[in-house]
Image 1: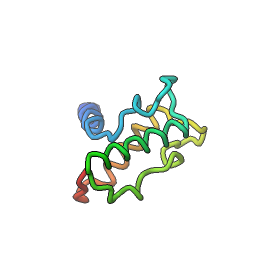
Image 2 (image 1 turned 90 degrees about the vertical axis):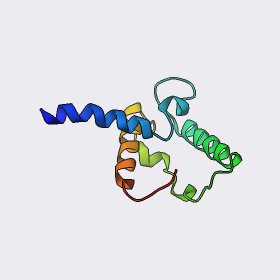
Image 3 (image 1 turned 90 degrees about the horizontal axis):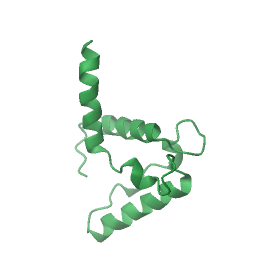
Image 4 (image 1 turned 120 degrees about the vertical axis):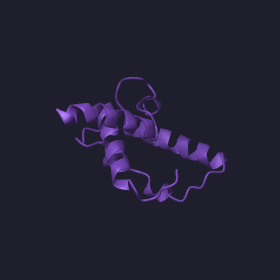
Length: 99
C-alpha cells in the first residue's frame, strides 16, 4: 500500500527532470519516434545549447537511439523514453552533474 502512495510522487518528480519531452522528438505526431526524428531533435537541442553558450562537456555521453529503443522495433514509444530518462536520472543521482 505504501508503494502506491509513493509511486505517483516519484513519477511527477521524474517528469520534472525529463531532458526533452516526447512531443519534441515526435515531429510528425504519430505517437512514436523514429531514428531520424530522434537524431534530428538531438542535433537541434545540442545546437540550441551551443548557441546559448552552454558547456557541451557531456555531449559524448549523449544516448544513442538504440539505447532508448528497448524492444528494438525501430521506434521509441513514450514509455520507452520515460523509462530511459527515469533510469538515467536514477543512475546519475548524487553524482553532482550540472545540467
